[in-house]
Length: 375
Image (cartoon, rainbow, N blue to C red):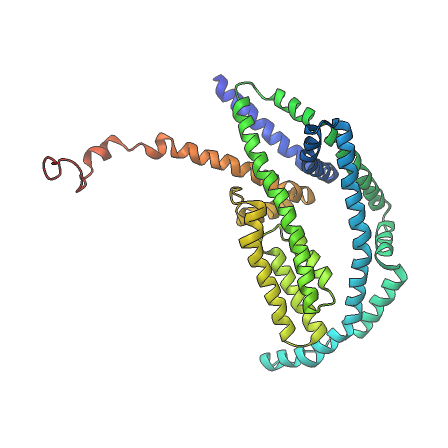
């Protein structure tokens, strides 16, 4: 067997084995992938501190402490806000039930000609409010949920412990790990693989960091705009719609659906619904025409359809781990397909025409010799 063919089979076996290993270890990979993602986002900040003369370990400690404090601040701010929004939902359930029974059910019955039963939400509302008060809010719900299973509680404790520890060590040794991986690459392929890796890093970093800024901007805009409309659930709807906006159009779909329902539940009128639609229409236009070109850029090459497919395929194949690795894998595939396209356009398969076709084709009208010598 030729050496080239044997090497290709070895590389293919390595790729298949790596994919199988990821599949088998997917139940425990999530905290390590989240730590790698945080390290990837924090490494440029550490490098910037190093260029200013700071020791890498000290730079890592500063960046790690800043990321930790930011995460804790988000939790401390988000928990009471989410709890207040959930209480608003529980208090609004009776009004929603009355609106459904008095307006929606008769309207649907008149359209369909069928007898549609009314909805009894009184018992459900009382049970939900009682259960929520007994649990003691968001913290009580989390404690009850984790306490229902010892294995689940231990898993979350391990998760909360592993992510910070692994993030710190990956941040500290990021450049060393990349250098060691580079040393393992066969020397004959190292220049090409290094160039591809740099291009993947450019695509992925620009997409991830830009998309995080887009998500944050969307959260702030939707929350403020819906608050101006007067929705009681503006914060909850705005944060959720902005958080899932990394999947194209998903944030708008979820935001419009929940916003329209919240407006109907609160006002029972059509005009607030129109204002909600205006808010999300402006938000989608801002994202498409301003935020994404400005913060993410147009050189990335990750088409919205590719992003949606990558996230759904990753979740289907590997669950949460698949969702976490979907965009990095999509970036790698995008770069490889881009180079494969360039190779194809420069290959004889694309440009070479058979000799018989060249000899037998009819001459064009503007070809020299078609109408005699050219002046």
